[in-house]
Image (cartoon, rainbow, N blue to C red):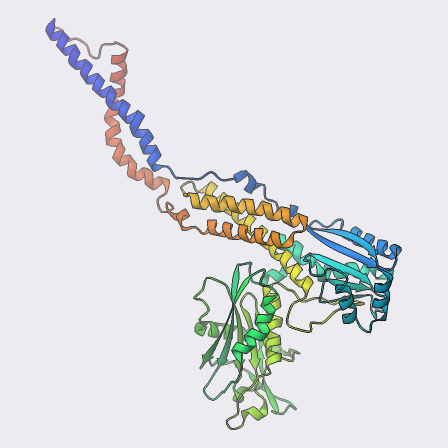
Length: 526
């Protein structure tokens, strides 16, 4: 009897030991292994990100119609409202007012349009962004005249269709703005993408020691490029630099053509070969050392033995006073052809500074997002009298950049959310989560401000959202576990845990039988 009791006690001890081992392994071991091998992910607003819709953006703006009588003001204002009521993006708030007798008499008596602008600016606030004043002035030679300020003149009530066309194509650039939502506009291929800042570098390329170039690079950058970008300082931070590149010779493979010029000939270079010069410049120009995009402006001094160099499109000479070309999202090049008298003896090449820098400013405009204006019949665009952009052009650029930054941030977040859904072992730490949540909040705030017409506030919010979205998408910690996918994880852990789990699984049947009080083995017969 005692021997049987001792055997039962030993059996009970073994079973309790097995049960303890199984309990520790299942209750503590498996949860601990699961917790230590899980991918850390901060909670993200996937619902808000999935609900982004670029077609639902609204851009609000204000227009004030100032006419000689109420009938004309109502007719022009009504036509503007009707023309833009179906616009999916632009929402114009139109107000109308009657010109005072003194202001109307002054506008009709002044000699020219710029003087009339001075009278208007003295009576209304043209410094307010995102506004436009459409003022009647009967002594116009055309139906519509658009100034460099936020003022447009129209002659009478028959100018309504021309006013609407000028608003769509010049002031608001509706086709460019609408295309920016889908990121498919033609101008997008030329302009630089949105960013916090840009480097503008003027490079003076001298091909050989025989060529002597005299050009005040620093002063020209400050007087022309600096004045231009100062008007855009609220949008971007600009850093101006200049450099000299010596011994940068390039074989244009130009064809000599006789003509009646002072040289008696010129050298024709095809446009399709000019891009090779950019590769040559990139090898020498130190513009890749910064993370900020660089806008390159290059003045290439043409040697006397290959001067004058003229750009041809196929077999047709390009009609331009300055031999220059532009490369989208890179910059522009001006070819400095020497004068015949500068090629004799120890002469120096001295390019015309205003003409050269004017060409560079003309190239900077589309590179930064200010497109060329198409001609509108019976409408005149006040020509630029300085290098500074027009006030309403800056407003249009602000609207465009807000739309670009919001759209880019939304698409970046949607791509990131889709990526996180497909790849389960991407880590989302607190910093990435904060960037994503900040971008989502910034997008919502920018859209609200844009719908209210608060253009500058919307730009600042959209820029913050764009930067936060880019920061989250490019965060290096997202790649931490990409080299260790699930199949490799199981390949490592299964050989480790299988030898331990095998006897545990086999002992579970015996342990269950013992717990139910059933005999573990048959008694041997005597």
